[in-house]
Amino acid sequence: TKPVNGGDSSSQDSGSDTIIGDNDGNAFTVNVTNGGTFFGHGNTGDLQFLNVENLVGGSGADVFNIAATLGILQPDGVTWVGGNVTSLSGTDVVTLANDQTVGGSVDLGDGTDTISINNGALVVGSIRGGNDDDNFNVDYTSGFLNRSLVIDGGNGNDVLNITGSAPTGST
Image (cartoon, rainbow, N blue to C red; front, side, top):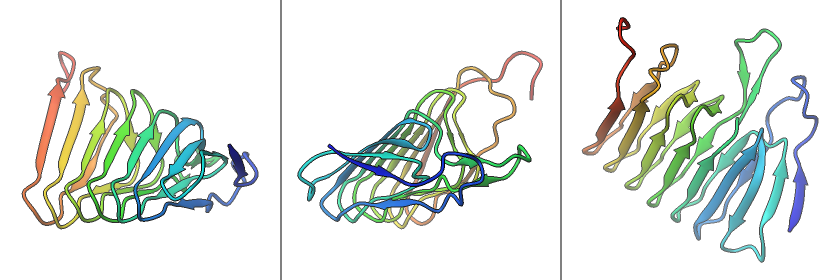
């Protein structure tokens, strides 16, 4: 295991730290705020990262498991720095676990990709599909009323699956 520390963990950090995967397929797991593990098939082992806000896959099949927050919420409580997930091409999968946040955008790139945004999860920026057929799965089971998602499917025949429903009395 190789450790990488992207810098200061305070909200004063620039938030511009990025891990870029190879073109043979990569697996990113965010399991603590701005940290987790990265395994690129060209690497000889896992890379442990901390204070890295942006993740970029390659042209192979990439998997992004977001089980903790990615990005930094600034002291004003509104502005996010970093937190972008970018898959370039290939058949990629992005999964946001329950109640987790990506502070920036998710760009699926080309390829037939799938993003699953689970119960209460949020992408602060936009979610963009690429030039192929993409699947967007959104779970509203808890009726997280303050969540607003901006989805641009791009070209291709895209599918938007919404499960759950808003609580009684909401619109």
